[in-house]
Length: 136
Image 1 (cartoon, rainbow, N blue to C red):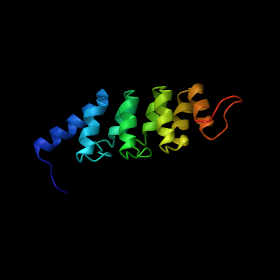
Image 2 (image 1 turned 180 degrees about the vertical axis):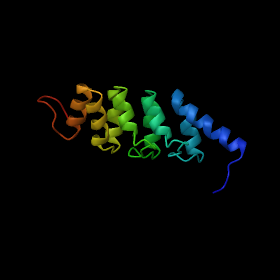
Image 3 (image 1 turned 45 degrees about the vertical axis):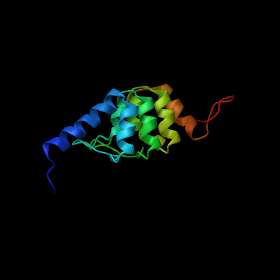
Image 4 (image 1 turned 30 degrees about the horizontal axis):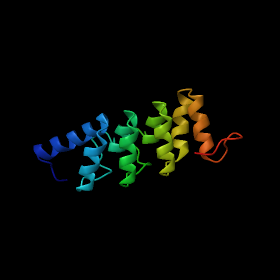
């Protein structure tokens, strides 16, 4: 395995910080310039997982539009959808579901943490919307 130089490691850390901070424009520009959209850190966290966990729907959307994998899990088996569910961010959950995230990865999180509103939202994604509501 090739070792990375200090400058490359610092650049990668800065990209992860952009995801955490919700700097969608700058991060999108970096991806457009060649940064791998599924860049993964030492613990398996992707830019998408970090953006979802830190409640940055705009950044999540920008990454998804550039091909980020909504199913990618970190070393602990956590996904961006699970992070968005844990943070109770319905808008991010909807964006991830529209991009093809498997509702089951978020459902486990919602059930474990007792988040009935998230269980309902994830259940509606399968087309089981209550009367008068559209599925996600």
